Length: 534
Image (cartoon, rainbow, N blue to C red; front, side, top):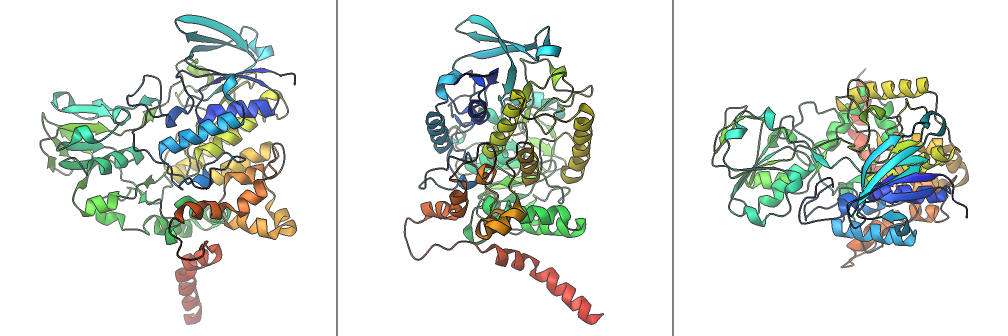
């Protein structure tokens, strides 16, 4: 087949692999540049942090379950656990790359040093991409660029926010440099930050360290991967019906439902974890051990650090943690694309402005796309798969973007909505199902729910009331996968299969009607009593 436009893809992680495959589906000619010697990006574990690359600790497991985080035409093996160790994800990505024949399009150990508009960009939309390998620098012209380098690369280390830290005599580092707990045996450790990494590290260290304290400025909801009746949390919570209720119920009822879900396992107020504003839909922390560690006294939660001394931390409530050996900053990451002129994707207020989190809206030609620059309760793999499919069609010219005015209006509208749901406009967080439906509608792959109820009610019930799994976005339209319908109808079988190591009865699948009935039983009863009394 004659290849079309040449596309440079920066990074061979999840987003990069999705982009290579999407380009090939559209007849484009991809060339992927990967700084390391392997695919996987964030999921490729290394025993030391490498400059310019994402870094994970050895014990990282997924927060999304396997049925919700697969490529939509490539399910995980039946025997893979629901929540997987990073090595399992790497195994899956390698199998996907080989199955789709993607490896031959990747240039490993190649660093992208600059991406610049060509002088005739206004008419051609082309880019000069400069790379470095083995000390040699090369430049090439590409018709388009897909940035897939992730946003967990450059650590946010706010040392200036903590008076006295320069006098602290213990060890101090960012969580990206944490790898395993052995070296902290018998130590007293302060973890700053109540995100996923901070809680994972704190609970892991609690089994070897003398004492672990977590300092949190604003608190967070902490939920378990194990949801009602032992099912994976995301297969129960991320549903089209649930999203409909959240976005259409009166705010007071929607907020009540949300807080009831978040507090279902334990009362966060009692554990010092309660968020300052509990109704904001910020991404919760997924940790199965933290409440037990707090109950057992091996992890304590404290407010923000007011100041440090040579050996201790004084918190804003006046209490002190003495004899600290180590401070670990689990304070997230900042966003940077060092190879790109920042004015391309940022506005005058230094905010990254992207239409649907993918396209810079003010360029003369829409030939650069950022893949993977969003966060939601949903998994990354289905998200970047859909983003890259859309981007490839825009680059090819079979899908056009709205006018600049319409794109800017959409961006501003989304910012206002983010302020309401997440507390700040610049967050990467978005409403998963709403976002996926927006992207899928652009390329004609959004499932038509009313039509499904008319033509295939069994499938429609699973699509609407069941988990919003990635298979839904390969049911129809370009890139349709013949196995999508069966994958949706059998997703619970694959989810329960790895649990059947000791068979004691038939598989018990969830009944979503009774799940929602139970959730609404109390308010329905109260309304009924009110109507009777009046």
